Length: 239
Image 1 (tube, rainbow, N blue to C red):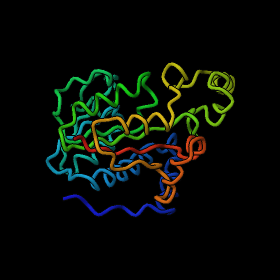
Image 2: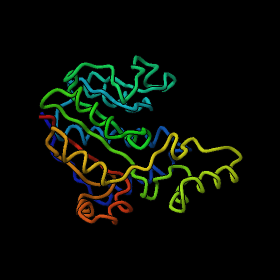
Image 3: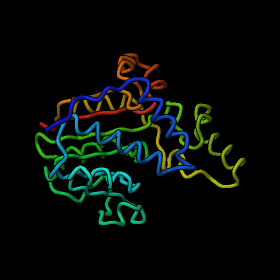
Image 4: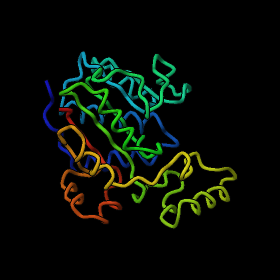
């Protein structure tokens, strides 16, 4: 059975952003909080017990523990074999060419990966391809113009991605992990919404992931939504 819809108010947003602030110093706290919240999001639309869940762009082991605790057959996939969850029985693969058959999984989950691939729409098409009819795709990503769009170079990316990278190198003595045009790409809220509208799927959710439910109205305002959304959440059911 699916669970009752979560109540997403200011308290939840404060909790998530508080955890976000310690991502670098207390990663287990941050990823555990995010994993718990993600489980709640998925369970609103499908039960997890006995379902096959493909995590595209997997990483922290906290997600593996959370999904498996719900009884899901959790399959982490990443291009990097050193990723913790992939080392523990995962799949090394390219998100642009997922090594799975059409309609072979119940749920495809992808958190904060879309901004790291050069062709995000093609990746989303692949995610939908491997989802069975009636299955769920949950995709969330940080858009470029959000306050965290430049990741560790934020908010200086608002003055230009290359300039933000150079500033980071001067201050830290080494380049950032996320380099615009290489490991980080300028994705927009508009891109995600347009992809969802033309996908062979029903759009169940489109809203800012970390903000209260009332903030979903911002998606109707081009320009403003690119700054305010912070992280776009899309949930689709494949037809």
